[in-house]
Image 1 (cartoon, rainbow, N blue to C red):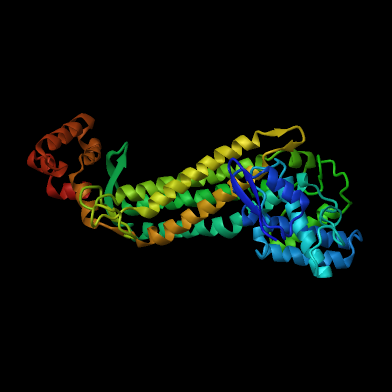
Image 2 (cartoon, rainbow, N blue to C red; image 1 turned 90 degrees about the vertical axis):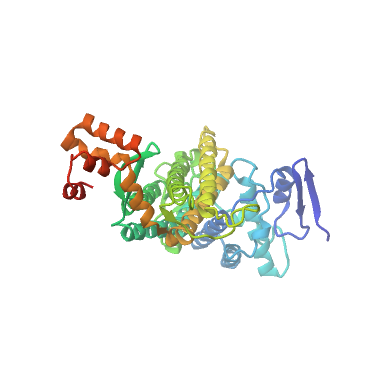
Length: 453
């Protein structure tokens, strides 16, 4: 059969007639052909993981026969392996509970389980998407739980290793440049000297603190709404199902999820997601500071600051031969802006919990998981393709220190503020160094100057 097209003012979606998903998903695609954006694979695969655990526990509880349970589990494994990624077709902008994506999953798993059992694609028999795949569950407890699980897994697998890589690269540069004095800068003006290693140590500490901020969210992300079903009361959820599913998740992931202390809060509120997004925004702020400092310090090569050199990755101009741009820092800056914008969307979506349910969960899932991926990719690329190859321009660093008027600050304990300011003024007007003015006016001998500066 030919693909059937579903059109609206914002685009055209092709719905394959032989899809594994069924009628409810088709109606969702027809109604929500908004943007062409899909929930990321991390979310879909985590949802399949929860469904696999539910089938396992429902079989253990005697609520699901072994044959359909095994078929559902195998279908879940195939979804998690990415075999059916093209079957999850519902737009991000859908019903706010994520029910459309939830039913998309239930229908794909049921159809695939039936194919495994009978050799034919069947929508509802012998495995039914609601009665068997969704047994004892609701979109209102499964979708928020999936959001927590997918975020926690993605942070553990991608973000934290990437941040640790960047921290290590910055710390290594801090050690490498520990003895190289350079001028400090505040308000974009010369300040007293530091070492280039000091500057990089600040960046390394920023990343280290970013890791701590992200980890601090884990106890709240660990709480899952499973067992709360529709409104938190647990209607139609058999005793032992939620605890058993969470036990499976912990054994399979190596993490430590728990049942929410208050299921009504866990279903109605997404404050933990807002908190996690805010931590990612803080990471984005740190990445912005680091990327900006690196590109400014590397500006030039002859008419900028030029205290460091970064790897040249590609031609920087279509019109100016030989120009090389700081492409990695600039890519990181753009990603950081997107993470910050995502956080604004997550915060606004978090405000949209009315009574017993938040109704912007797909939007929150899309933005949070994109932020995790962007922050991870930014940190990894900045570490590998920029920081690791940074070289110091020792001559420029030393020269900037020698000619800086900020060295007059070091004279204050000996000469007083007013007299030190006068020395700086004379040096500036005469185009001389602080040391030369001190020497010429007999205010300090060569040995004292060496000790001081």
